[in-house]
Image (cartoon, rainbow, N blue to C red; front, side, top):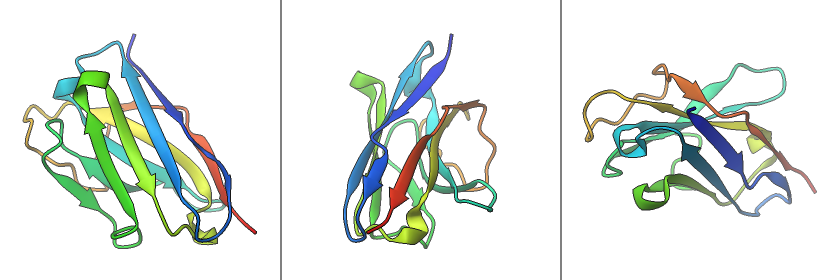
Length: 127
């Protein structure tokens, strides 16, 4: 059974950092591109970072570029999200998602559809 489990959420002060993990199981992780999405209160879920299945290519929303870094370790079936310089606007439920686009170098668009989703983890940025 394909499963994605996010961890690393919590409460952090403005300017702080968090590191997320998305652990995958039940499928051939090497073939799947991964995306990170978030849903802020009263807003629609939106993608902000994606990474190709090989890990060689990434894509970021302007709102997180330079602050967030997506990476992956295929040997550990895990994708990471390093988030720095957090602001209250980053408060949201964060989700990872996976999809097999058939090409290891392909990096998904931020609004591209993904097939499999984690349950999400809450991040609250507040003093």
